[in-house]
Length: 239
Image (tube, rainbow, N blue to C red; front, side, top):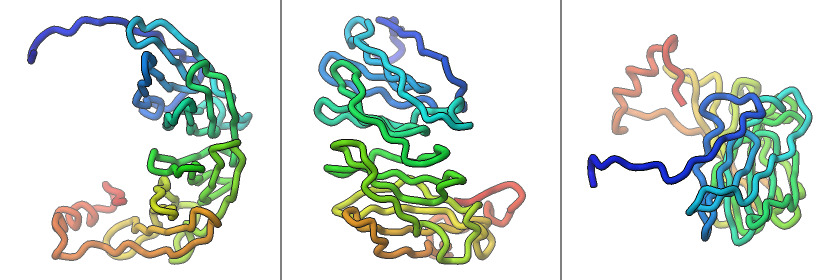
C-alpha cells in the first residue's frame, strides 16, 4: 500500500577493499532461482534471496596496472549457468552455482573499457576501449573460452578529429553487425563535440562504414533548446 512502512528482511555488508570512483560501482543485481547476485567494486557476491545468507563470494582478479586501485565494476550478464562480468580491469566468466572462475581475459594494457548489455551475441562479447595505450579499439572476446578473437581500430580518425580527445562509446550488437558511436573533438558549428557511428562485421571485424552524425536543424524537436545550450561553450559540453 502507498505510504506503508517497509521493513528490512535482510541486508548484507559490502566489501570495501579497493578504492573506487563514486557512482561507478553500483550494478543492478541479478536474480536466478533462489539467488541474488551483487557486483560491487571488484567483488561478486551471491546470496540466498530468502535469507540473505552468502552462497558464495569471490573477488575478481585484477590486472596489475596503475589503474588497479580504481578498478570498478561495469556490468554482468547471466546466461544459463554462466555469469559474464565486464569490469574496468578485464572480462570474466564464472559458474553461477559456486562462483568458480571459468576464464578471464585482460584484453588491453591499461584498462578503460566501455560495454553495455547490448554488446553481446550468441558466441561473443564486444567491448570498446579508450585506454591511452590501446586507444579507440573494438574487441571481440569468445564466450566459450574467453580468448580475444580480434581487435580493430577505425572508430576514430576519419574526420580530422583529435584522437586523444575523441572517444568511442559502448558497442551494440544486432543481426551480425556491431555498431559503435563516438564523440568527435573538435566539432563544427556552435558545439564543442560532434558525433559519429561506425558499423563492423561481427565475424571478421571489418569496418563496413562510419558516418558523421549531423547537427540538428530547425526542423528537429528541441532544436532551440540545443542551440541555446550549445552556444555557451564555457558551461556545456554537448554529446
